[in-house]
Image (cartoon, rainbow, N blue to C red; front, side, top):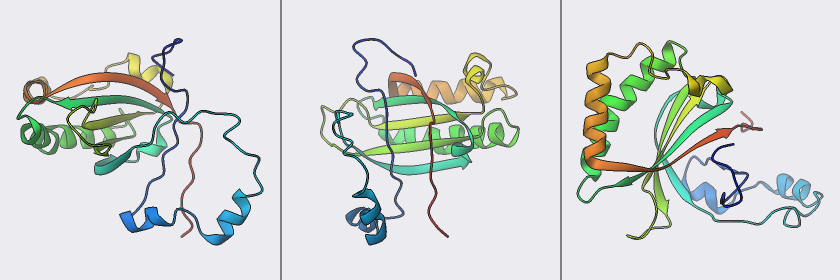
Length: 179
């Protein structure tokens, strides 16, 4: 949804969530492949911008229950990787768990970027604050969090990483695997 404009890199994102790397080798079952082959070619309708592999490191609540995501892409400052991971585990994750329990947000994801690698990549981590409605981003999405705890989380994170991009996404559709 945001940011927009002519220089916006992409308009849609498709995510496949796998339980393991082995499952990535066989994305679809044979009955699914047969069904997919009946679909019209999608490549005439879109241009693929890039592929990435992320690792889901932390999850709180039910992020897919929220239809809107405040998505932030973070880049490590030199030597800041371990400090930021510690800030996530000791501060952001418990804070988001509390916010999720109280309904301020529906959930939270923390991802590490695995591929592509290299020192020139634009970001190392991605966080999703899952929100219940479009207007939630304009409210205090940290409502009820003790100010000292929030300030400490921001202080530790700011020393270890920069937020290079902030986007706002709307979930269009989601599927879940058969039980």
